[in-house]
Length: 266
Image: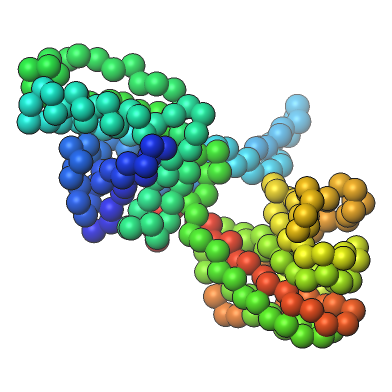
């Protein structure tokens, strides 16, 4: 059985479903929308006399979820405290975290809007309330963590790469000072880096596209001068494939494989 928990902005941890469900007197009821499939849709265009349409692109929206949550208490005072603690852990401006299976995958989430709560069952008598919550994760992918591999050497340094997920994976590179050339995904194209005199970290994801150095801000626009990465590691690359970051001389490189999934499990 899978489990779902929420770690709030004030530090509380709430077991909503599965193992430990309702241990804090809050649980997921019979309604959850947007948790399982990713919010992606195809966009197409059509000319006046065209039969059918022409596919153009896929849009990946933010993930908006609707959860029916119930709070309870043995006494009115206890229920009031449960309500106070639960809502103290939610914000419109700060992320909490939904976790499945003990943190195997997670989403950073916040309130999309405050729920329009009703008093349909006399909560001050029954010591129970349900809330139809709408929450949002601005990154729609379930996160699975980072798998780093670090090696030292000279010239071309072989690094084995895998991507067991169902989504394209963009690598992060962390390196020592020097003149590096980095592979563009699994293609034969190599991207030359500027010569740097300090340690650096580069995010190839086009949604991030940042080059950081040890004692400075992001440098991508000034230093990369329009040069960018175009290839992600394909989904379900389960057999290791070697890539070859290359340095003029010797150095140390760390490659970070960032696992992201469309669904909370499977």
